[in-house]
Image (cartoon, rainbow, N blue to C red; front, side, top):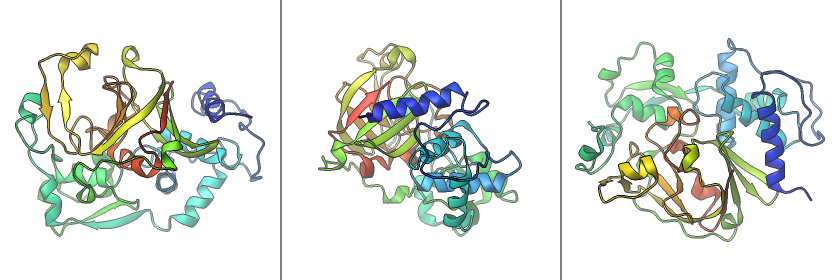
Length: 334
């Protein structure tokens, strides 16, 4: 029997072999059950097709990275994994595009800013010793708040709202945003701990540090994939671990020595929770002490930089973990 690890390795080997779809033709990892006409990836000018595709993939839990209308590596990888479910060629965009058209009727929706939103916006210092003196690491602007809420960045948000002066956005302002299920931080429970679950604790998450991807499996069925930022090579703890705990709004022990050398010191700062915490809005600690999966203050850097040893996901993705896996689940870091 082919194990899920072997299957994932096969998918990722195909992707890396082709330089993430930038040449060559290789068969799908298993015999195709879905016979469709081959459709290549959308071109750069097909922005609206790409946006619809990204929204669709995000809704299916195959994270395309930030929604920005650009065919980046994570959108391609999300399509490859989505295709794997039906045995379709990894680089045939026919199914994903067709189903995105059926599923996503409108690429955009209108978001009306509320007074409550500004409770999550404040002047937040950048230095840890100053952050340790406040109670909450809020968003630094309403633009940052809305961008993360709708799984994008402030550049794309500005692009689709060209006449908006962000310094003048107030309660009642109406904004154009991607039509994706929002990350509603106001619904985030404080210090919520998630227990083991009969089904979800049996699942497995494979973290591939060479592909910057985390894939969640239930036996031999692929459930979800998300872009990640792994630790620096010298800090990566490869092997099999267990999820030990899972909690929202974590407090972060900022220790420069730990971040630079991997060794704890007595000189540290305890940083409060919030979306601009270095570990984001959720922590899933592993059986390897000090290591975990967590959110980030910088979602635009996911897959494009390195952390100090943990596995970072965008806050809008890390918040999905409790519905997909629970303490007791196996985490294999490769």
